[in-house]
Picture 1 (cartoon, helix red, strand yellow):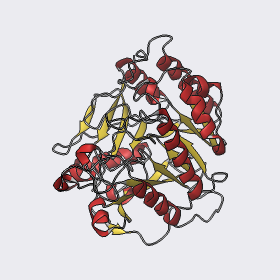
Picture 2 (tube, rainbow, N blue to C red):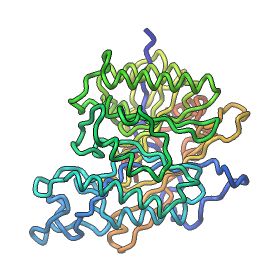
Picture 3 (spheres, rainbow, N blue to C red):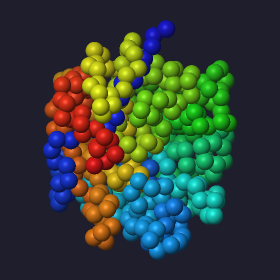
Picture 4 (cartoon, helix red, strand yellow):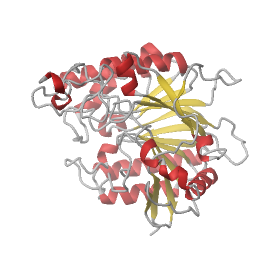
Amino acid sequence: MKVTTALCVAGLLTTLVQGAPVHVKETASATPSVHGKFLHITDIHLDTHYLAGSDPNELCHRKTKSSKNTAGKFGTLSSQCDSPVSLVEASFGFMKSNIADVDFILYTGDTARHDRDNKLARTSKDVVQDHKQVIQYFQNTYDLTKVKLIPTIGNNDMFDHDILTENDSMYGTLEEIWAPLGLNLTNDWRKGGYFVQNINDKLRVINTNSMFFFNKNDNVDDCVSGSPGQIQMQWIQQQLTAARNAKAQVYIIGHVPPNDDDGSLLFKNKCHSQYLNLLGQFGDVVSGHFTGHTNDDVLTAIVPNGKSVIAMPDESPKSLSQVSTVLFNAPSIVPANNPAIRVYNYETSANAKGSAYGSILDWTQYYADLEKANAAGKLNYELEYVASQLFSVKNFNDVGVKQAFSNLNTNSTARQLYSKVVKVS
């Protein structure tokens, strides 16, 4: 059997442009109808109970001794606290002012706060209200009749954290909340929480339910015959085959990536091997794979017939002989690290030399210095890096990613920056 494994860059590296203030809106394309850019955000984790000046050990919900009440106005960095309303509103304010000219939005899930506080248990009503509020933020920021918003389900987006099965009532609840988005929610969604959305006749988004693969979801089996994961796997293969036959390219989105930052599996064993093999088989169709969940900035290459290798900050990553598919894991809004927002540039010419329609050309990573924002009482997003400058490549198709890994392999200075940038500056 053909084996496909993942090689992961634990974080993206920056040698320039980090910390540059953002003053200018993104430049629009010469073709108004297609800008060749899309927005990717993930893991908002809105917490309407967040209390500035409270104790982070109390999940930023209650005050204790004055010396421990250090929760900042815009969030508490590297804590278990979720995102205050002030952070979420400032983030959407930045998007509205600076990232208006995008063709569509990929939102890879985790809208609701974590259910970590035993003294303030998260209710079903809380989860539903968080979903409604975040959709309202999107509606206030973008004209969603022109800019398609495509959300997916995170492991905190259902009533029971980490647990999701077929025919769950949450699918119907989200279908109602997402009604203004005009999504292609068929019986596949109502049963399994996945769907396919056409961007145009050349590009489709396959929205997966990664919860059916997630190793913490104890209510579904590994991907054996008849399991929810195996049924979804067959559905994904059908969608990829249909796209190939239609000469269309595909983006795949989900919340949980197949691997964690250290290379350990986040998918169940059988699901993991089947999924990576599927991505390897359809490398000619899949132009990008987008996830969140880990809060970190990670680039992964799916490599056919290779060993599983992960590039760590203290060692040289191995060179790639072949790349089938590229996995992009974006950093989050929730301040496990500094909050982050990403904009991709993608190929919009079907006849572009060396790149298929939808191929990722570049991306721009923005971040907010949370400690500075809390001290100043005002949050600003800044430019952290531009990927093409960072990796010294022209694009991120298979050839470009091979070159990016090669450049990384020979640049010890860049490797030393792993540990900083993986956690968003």
